[in-house]
Length: 358
Image (cartoon, rainbow, N blue to C red; front, side, top):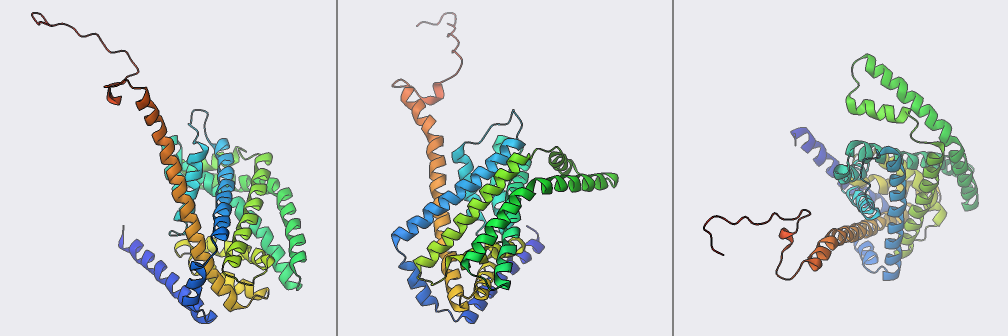
């Protein structure tokens, strides 16, 4: 690793610490009481948080598998549902210690390395499926901004959010056609300047080929909307876990702005940036900054615990699946044999040497 990258990494970590300290000071947070609240979380509520995290990963996995089905060639092997779930859970865990934009992409790229076309299926596939999350939150941010501007409440936000999601569902197909046209123009411009590499050219050709059909894009919008709902429900569970009096619609209205902040965040896992954004936006909707800041810290701790627990569970499932065929093969081996002696081809008969006595 170069000196520049080391300095950038250290600077990013230092910025996270500064932002967390700023959040604690501005919000007058008592860390000791916050930790007591986190330690005293009901096991039933934490179990619901874990199950919601599993549902969130399942939705993200379904999105990626839908894109991967359109990306991969007929000769490419298909990762199992358990393997895809493991890649996604690992990506979410990595997103807590790496910049959020890199965590999921790195996990899926590494995971699909043994299945062929890792750059296209892992990197490009992840970026495309996550772009629909970004598309949805852009529309939802408009609903949140309108609700705040007109001084509306929860019902106004729900109605406006539903309308914006319906608009996103209707607009996604034309938007994808425009995106493919822009990608084609950019590819042609780079090709004329001899700056279009092979991988980048393949990516642009893939976009321009219309591989993302109207049916697929609208399916991804629906899955992204369902994923947003689960994220809000998880935030509601963490608020209930620590007794934070935050209305659920406040959390829902603030989440789009937090997602947008995390896209451009340069801190590991968006630490500090997400918490400050949450507390600030919640204050705009009527939740005191101190309440929002304390909840944001507790939400980070509980979210990390739930995410790593699910990732560990997924790793155990993958390990069991890999070991199961070996155990089954051992059970079929006759007593006194070894697995190393098993071969798909019949063994050659032993040739008796001249003069050798049996």
